[in-house]
Length: 545
Image (cartoon, rainbow, N blue to C red; front, side):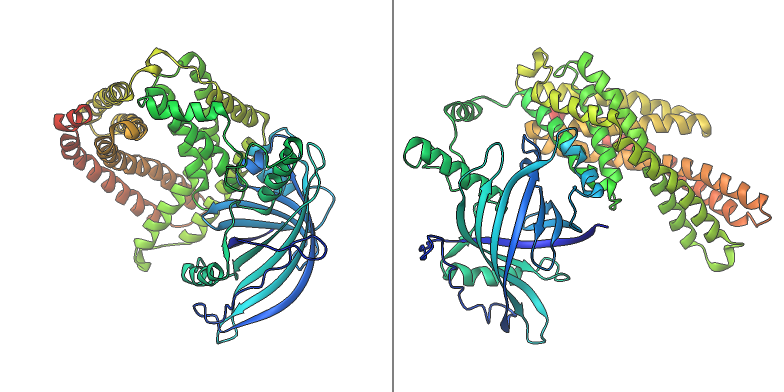
């Protein structure tokens, strides 16, 4: 069983520490925190001894993404802890009971990062934690302040000599949300007391930085080559300095723009995997969008990336989007049906309409969730992630990749626009009925592709690309609402058939069907005027100016 909580904390280091009799840094005296914001009193909770072993792959994939996995004994929350980054000062912490092996649920959440690599002990930390609660006038605990005296050893690739440091953590109590004012008030007192924000984001990162710095100092007989770098950050190599200088001198190229977009979407796929597995709101939708954006970039920017390489990857992304789409389509259908049903007065809801809708939705959900999790646990999916990593590391660039970005991306956006214009003309000329529904759906997919191409182009074109993408979003929204209505009507027909077969009234489903027809017709009437507005030549000309 895995428990979850949100951890909002800040870490601080002492600006100066004096060694005690044992040669270890003494606990710095905390400044007075009573009166910092709503803090009325500070309650000591005593000292706990914590032993933690941190795990990672040999290539430190977890650390690279700001994730920590540890097995800890001591304290009130001993067990396995997995921490996933959420935002500044914020991480999602999952906890499971003690055991020899990494809990299966945690291992699954790490699969998109770990893949086939083993998880091995990376570092061991011994911490003496002096805890204090910050309490308001009503006796409510607002936050916990911990003074941690840490002794750390790196365990891989070889065991290091121990390093020691002292740090202070301020963690908001559960249920406090992100109380920025409290954190800022406490930080002000800590700064006045000689503390500053820690340079490294976690104890593990600090341990690795300090043990590696100590090893360099031993080898060089001094502070080592990283002496002028910030604490916890390695010095840049000569090659890195040269690359940075070249990046400043070199104009923005088409490869810079396209590869940055592609790499961000690959990162989104990997990052959203745990959220999809945990069934978090909107996670499936966002992951599916990342697959679509990647496929769109491969197609739109075929003059930058070689399609003989990207087309097979695009086919695999289409497969993944299809597996995710079953769940996403269910979500959209259920939300829309529930919304339409809620709009009806009670006297128009005849029969057990709500129960039938709930039963229908749950049945589809069970199958959809199984399909999604099966896809994410498959070798095919892991191979796709490896292939995307390889593409990002060694992209199959074509000659246009070396050209200045602006003309290349403008050409790509306008090519996609012309394709959309052709499909829009077909949709507007086709008589109402199933054929028009198909034509509108094809136009919707083309509008989405133009929008993604314009989003990709923003670093090179700036506001014109942003505005162009926004116009394409408006077209996509109308076309998408029309398509959703088509799909909802199919579902309503099926629900009405089921209700009729069970001897129930199918009146309400028929009524909703009629309303969806009217909504789709209204969208069709809206479309010509919208398209006339967004397809003005001046909008395309702005991209080229």
